[in-house]
Image (cartoon, rainbow, N blue to C red; front, side, top):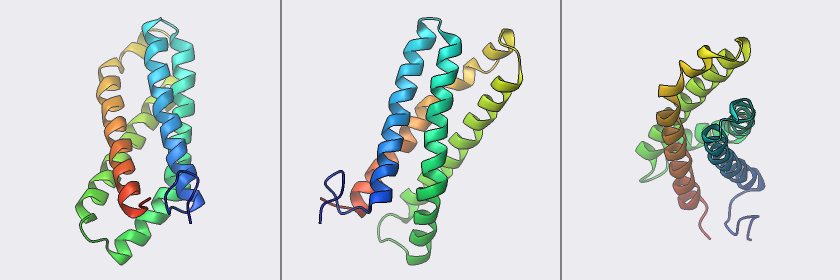
Length: 141
């Protein structure tokens, strides 16, 4: 039987994948907004992207990862572990930056974390790509 995305994935995994793609698109929109100096809107869009990522991570990916670690998946163990580690780093750093941003007045403090943002966005993108590859391996068409 075919799922939402044309694979054998359960509905929750399909919704999680869609949430990740929406979050990634939000990062792209956030990049455009900050280049146009719409910094406040950039922060809001990235915060919403973070929340989509966090929700799908906690509600779907963590339970699936726990099951996969118990069962063991041939040929994917190291990839899944790296994906989980990278995802934890991304969620932790993004969460820290967003909490710090919300607790401080806009201004120079916003720019102090600028050097972190591009590497974090690239790590987030890499984490989503790894997740897509795992998804396609686990749930073939």
